[in-house]
Length: 306
Image (cartoon, rainbow, N blue to C red; front, top):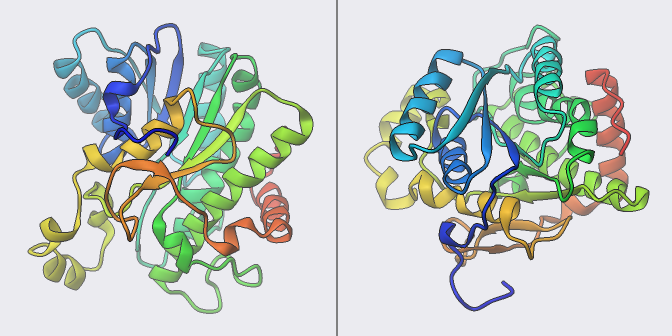
């Protein structure tokens, strides 16, 4: 950390006049991020798969922050057609986007394919956000000081990008697929930073992870895991309001810089005050990052050129 004092949501500067897009903002970390950004004056777009849940989330935020400026937009990251349609709506409505938080995700799902033929976790967590970022790039570059913050996981350290079997066709493990997708999130954020820096763009790319946090991701866990884990969850999981702080800091701290990675500063990075943490070794491999970028362009049809 750059200061000894514990960083908190109270340190977020005024965001009046800015537009922020938060994916997965109907619950968990995304909901809390949207609420804090709105509390500090940003016009927040809740980009959600289920519009009804998005409207309910917006009402919840409005009840706590009466001055909140909110927009709900449908965006299903597992379907590239939905990503394209949602991005087009966002570009038309918001020619300048100051902040994009790539937060939405699924975890430990059963084997499933998206309509585009991609493994569900890799598609939702990584490919959808890769495409969305590329499609919104002009609106982001048009906003002074804009940032893209991609939410990874401390489990990225257990991940490996299997370029021979990205979609788990040869063998599928829900845990391996999740770790791969969150490693891909971090690799994308770091490679985007590298390419933005090379091009001289003002836009910044950062990453964050929430540690161990209680969110709605548990709905996809296998039933035995839910039964065994529920009684123990309070002992290990921090609330979503705490888990969102690394992402909020990456998004708003004036001292944060492109290429930085924020997470809880506890010994195991599972909880604690938000600050700078180190990416796992696999995430900083430049060759693997380039290859992932090229594969992502091929799989999404979106040529992301910073």
